[in-house]
Length: 363
Length: 265
Image 1: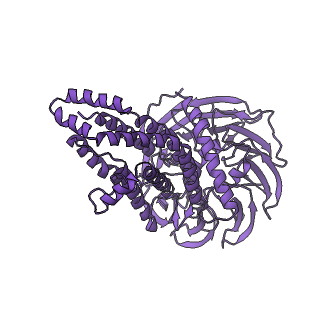
Image 2: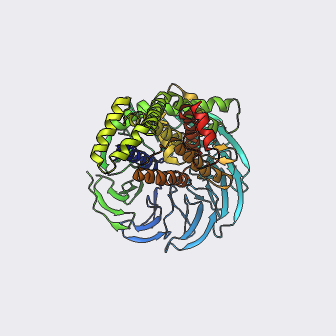
Image 3: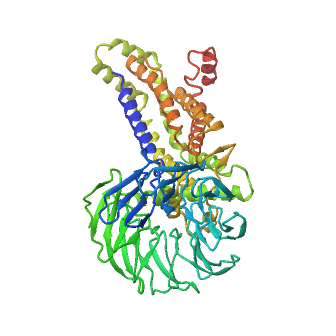
């Protein structure tokens, strides 16, 4: 026997194994981090299985899911108006679905993946951004395009609409204020780095994060009022409640900042075990959020100290939703959890791949 | 095993990500079009240069082995012990020892650069940050003392009319073809002639299957990654040429004799 054969076989196997490694490690798959929205006791959410689901918020019973063939990923939190659910997906399509049945009313081909969550105006327009470096305004009932605004980078951030002004942010480092009726630019602000967070507007100020900096801008002209520098990138949508801005960092810190000055409110920031990308959702005296360390946290908003945490079996990058004393959150373990907001106890959970109830082994 | 990922990142991926992004930032500052594509090429060349000694060792070992297998003595014992495979193996081992050839000598040096190449691959994908999760991960790899790198994100992935972050489309379909051809050429130059029908058959099937496999999967890879494969292969071809000449590349073609003569020189 030629002694080279075993050698070559071994080498070939190693090469194939390496190729297999390359294949499996081909970046991480787009999984999505859609948050949930609860309206009239129905929970609407995008799932890690690439679908939009409507569930009974009290029991987790599946009402409908869309589409039949899953999209590559859903990052956008569904928006509701006019009896329709509006959501963009990574398959380049923006959909309007019947909120009661999930039937598709219309779709718009954005020619690029959609990450940004939509916002619906009282003027009958629905707005969203795309990876195609554009912000679109469509007729909310028909899907007809009204205007589009071009940026120099992908628009991943969720949009904010208030008092006829649409606030958007782009990977081109800029925050934009646009006339919601026409798409005309009112002002823009260079944040010095990518902006992936939804601009939050309160008391005449716009709060937004670019890389590790959090900015408060004058809503009328984009002038910087203050900035706060965190130790790592900020990917959470800033939450503003009663004069306090809550943000999390990819190093796992959670900060409470004075909305007028940007000064820290807590003695020390709360520290999760890993990155916090999920928005900090505040109700009463408690703030809720998920972390890359697979936990859902509840902390005291006055002190920043932990109240409870619930371990799941996957990363939690999506923002929780609060309703009727429950915290709804999706995990990368492909389960959607409904937790008791007071204790963190699992009330129910479902497998998003099947829509069936699950019995998670969480601690 | 949880400590392995941070260790791998600290030693391999983090330095590579920062160097790659630094090269991109430098090129971008002087407004060179297609800066990320050029950064990938430069960085692949740099990494190839670092791993050059391992490849040279491998290629020298292969050349020695090739010469031994083409000797009359080798052919004679193959003929003599054609029906006694165990004895044949013993005799071949004696010949290896006599000629100072380690039949496994080419394997170890070939394996050492793989972790580096896998790290390079991961770095290219991470820096590209085509998906939100990837870009989010990138923050974990950047050195805090180089803030200019974070400010350069996202990298502009346009290169020669192609988008390096996307799978091939339009003119980009030339990329999988180049991957296939460059893989085939390199493999054809490296393959050693053998009189063993089993080994010859295996060589033949590998010669077809491997380039096809790599070319096919490159259809579903971002163009930037395939660009790295092409540069990786081309450097390998050049290295191989200077070590063993054209090898068997022109076997069965009118240029075969000429290629052999140039190799002997």
